[in-house]
Image (cartoon, rainbow, N blue to C red; front, top):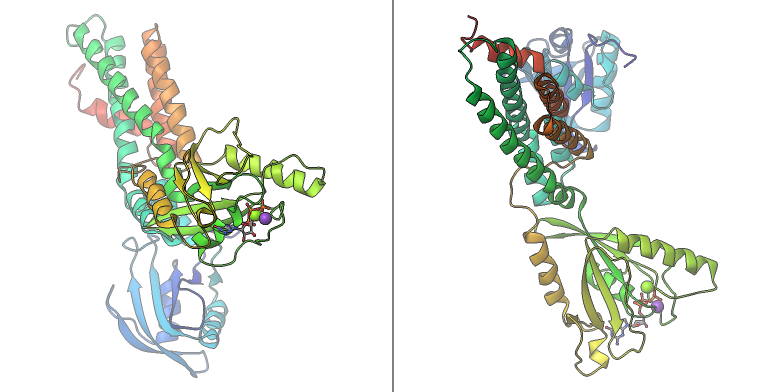
Length: 434
Ligand SMILES: Nc1nc2c(ncn2[C@@H]2O[C@H](COP(=O)(O)OP(=O)(O)OP(=O)(O)O)[C@@H](O)[C@H]2O)c(=O)[nH]1
Ligand SMILES: [K+]
Ligand SMILES: [Mg+2]
C-alpha cells in the first residue's frame, strides 16, 4: 500500500445514493478530532447522539446520528466514528470535502478490513467470509458466509494446527529425552494414531470442497442437445423471460448464455448452448466448441431431444450427471426412454424438472464447515501432503519437521496461527525436563 497505515481514513460504508440514510465511517488516530470538528461534541463511547453537522464556516450541512467507538473495541481496532447522515449525494459530498480538508483521506478498497486484520480483529478466513456475506444473494450463500465469517471455520483450522503442534511437541520430547523414563515409547504410538485420525478428518474436509463451490459459485446446469431440440425455449421458460433468441431455424444459438436462478435458497446457473452438430459455419463451429466445454464443466447436464426424433445423441466425456429430457411433449404422444418429458410451450413437466434439480441440490451441503475457496483448498492439500509424509516417514526428526510444515500450511489459511508460538504454549504445559 502506498498510503501510510496511520492515516485516518473515511468512506461511505452504505449503499448507492440517494438513500434514506448514508453511513460514513472514519477510522484512525484523527477520527475523534475530525468528528468533533464537524459535530461539535461526541456522545459517550458506542452511544448514538443526534448532532448538527457543520462546515468549517459554521454552515449547517445536515443532522446526523454520530457514534464513536474507541479502539481497540471497534471494527478496525482503531478509533472509529460512524455518521448516519441523510443519504443524498450533496450531503455526502459536502461531508467528504470537510473531512479531506481536515486532513483525512478516502479509504482504498478493502482498507477497513485490512486494518481489522492487521490489528488482530479478524483473520483472513473471517475477512473473506465477511466479503462473501456482503456479496451473498441466496440464503445458502448467506449461511455459508456466516459459518466462515464469524469464526467457526477459523476455529476448526486453528484446532487442527494445535493438534499437529502438540503431536510434534511430544515427538520432539521423545527425541530430546530418549534416555529418560519420562516419555514412554507408547506415547509415540498414540501420537501417530492421533495424527492418522486428523489426516482422515482433513481429507474428508477437502472432499467436501465441491459443496462449498456449488453454494458459493452456483450449481451449473447445462442445457445441451441437437439443434432445435428446444434448449433456448427451456432456458426462457425457466427464467420466465426472453433471455435467448428462439426461432425454428436450426443453429440459432451460438453463444453460451446463462441465467442465474435462486431455487429455494440455492444459486443455480443454467447455461443455454449451441445445438451440437457438425457444421461448415465457422461461427457455429465455435458455438459448438464452447458448448462442449460447458458440458465438460457442468454439475448437471440436461440432455434435450425432441421426442421421436431420429438424432439419438450420445455424449462422450460427460463427467456430470445427465438427465435425459424429451421435449415438445405437447406435439407428441407419450414416449419412453427419457428421464422426463417436458413442453416449454405449455409448461408441462417443468415443475417436475425443478424438483428433480432441487433434490440433487439439497443433498450437496449439510450446513457443515467446508473449504469454499481455492486458497483454502491449496493449503489444506499441502497440509494433508505433509501429514502423509510424516505418517510414512522413517527418521523421527524428519517426521517432526513434516508435522511442523503441515501446521504452518494450516496457519496460512487464517494468516494468524504462529506455529512456534503454539509450541511455546504446549511445551510450557509439559513437565518433562522441568
Ligand atoms: N410445440 C412446441 N414447440 C417448441 C417447444 N419448445 C421449442 N419449440 C419450438 O422449437 C423450435 C426450436 O426451439 P429453440 O428453443 O430455438 O431450440 P434450440 O434447441 O435452442 O435450437 P438451436 O439454438 O438452434 O440449437 C422453435 O420454433 C420453438 O418455438 C415446445 O415445448 N413445444
Ligand atoms: K432453433
Ligand atoms: Mg437455442
